[in-house]
Image (tube, rainbow, N blue to C red; front, side, top):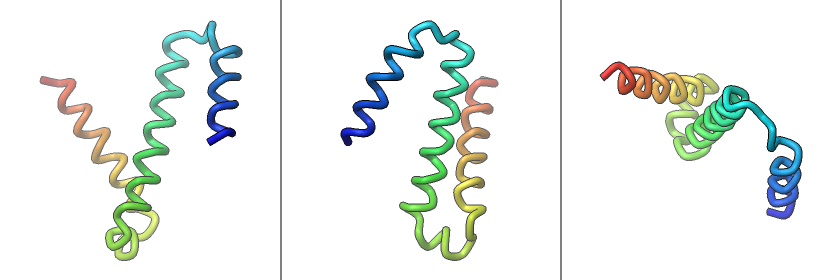
Length: 72
């Protein structure tokens, strides 16, 4: 908890002039990492049967859902 707070503080100081494109890229990478971690942690049976591909397939499924939503 303390490490996250200190990291957020320094990011707020050093990344204030970050372009919106890079900010969106960093947010996307963080979201992908979170989705993969959740899939591998919260879906133990799927991870047990599918292996490491479970997290990646969950991420691609989420990205496909967002992509098709953007096409509407």
